[in-house]
Image 1 (cartoon, rainbow, N blue to C red):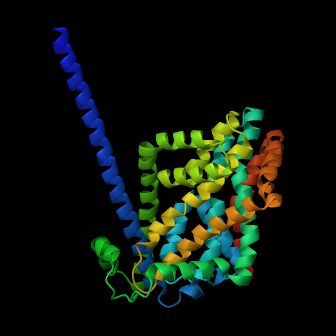
Image 2 (cartoon, rainbow, N blue to C red):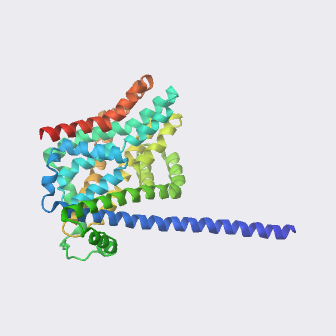
Length: 393
């Protein structure tokens, strides 16, 4: 074979490989769009199922959570077990559409914000064999815990007393919907797009007794949300994580504004705050970045993760559509106000850092303390409080 012929063959091979790669990326993007459609359908199915199962008794069903602290614990524990705040907040949005009062849902959303931090704390345990690495990694993971706990300590009492987040979200939702007719008969593009799927599920479930059909629809919707978000995350990691890592590496250390913005952007790209914050833990463990450099990026990840709930809210039509958008906006405003209050006040700004550094030092000396923190803060304490309330309530 001549050099010219060989060169042409190599070029043809390269072109074929490039075409195959491009085709693979196109298929992944199309699959991603299909999964987003599945997510939106699933939210709609849960809303319909919750409404069917509870009838007009949704509020009575959640009487145990009318105590906002129990609602908070429900959010923490559910997210800790499912390991996805996106899944939990999407389910909460759907339940609000089905009749769950917004006032009950607000502390659940706050709890979901805390529960999602368990993932990166577990990731830090991978450095347990090296004392110095573990100290740095555990501190980098738990700074997210401390920030979110502090946000709840500040904003939950204010919400209980004055409902600022709920009121602001209500006003913002009205602006988005304007004076549009929100009756169930009002045509909605999302409804029209999802009706073939949701209508089929509802028709099949209607063969069962009313309450059971609603429960089955809820179960199907939850399973679909869980699988959709799981595979959306995997696809986005393949499509975006390389780019996300470059953004992260370029942004950390350039200042708090850059860190927060990049944290929100990377989380938006990969659709998982757990992924975003977990990417930072090894960087902290190796000493590549300090805790104070990583801290703003962590705050930004809280904001980026609110996009999923907002996307889920677009699936809702009918009379409760505005309420579904309202609870999604509560999630966004909660994280924005937490950033502004804690980040804007110097005496609060350093509390999560100091707490994480101290806990990292203690955990490095006593490994059992790290396990106790994970199991106690995210599982045992919420479960105990829920059980006590159920027994005494």
